[in-house]
Image 1 (cartoon, rainbow, N blue to C red):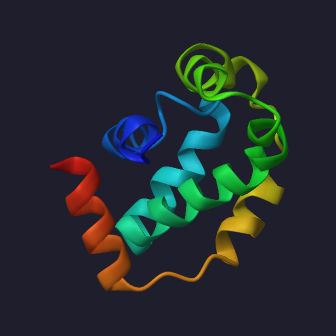
Image 2 (cartoon, rainbow, N blue to C red; image 1 turned 135 degrees about the vertical axis):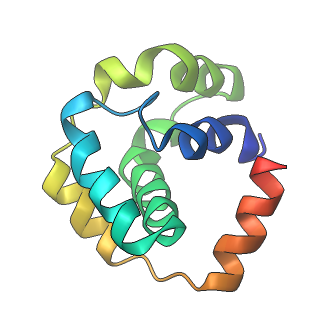
Length: 104
């Protein structure tokens, strides 16, 4: 599965299609302050938080999980998510190249 399968929707909607609604205002604030770096950090943090669950699934299960189930089950502590995102190190070249790949 390539990252564009799920991340393009994440990035185009700033996670509004994916995360519980109460998590969105801080993400929007981070986006206004930091730009796309913040969104990239959140995306990596989400994948880190979901890694134990995703590693137990087959590819088709992951596709269904991302498309249908994840918002209902996404009850992670938002502070843990933002702390994890804060520790993700990215540079402008990485974000630009990834966004070019995903959004084009």
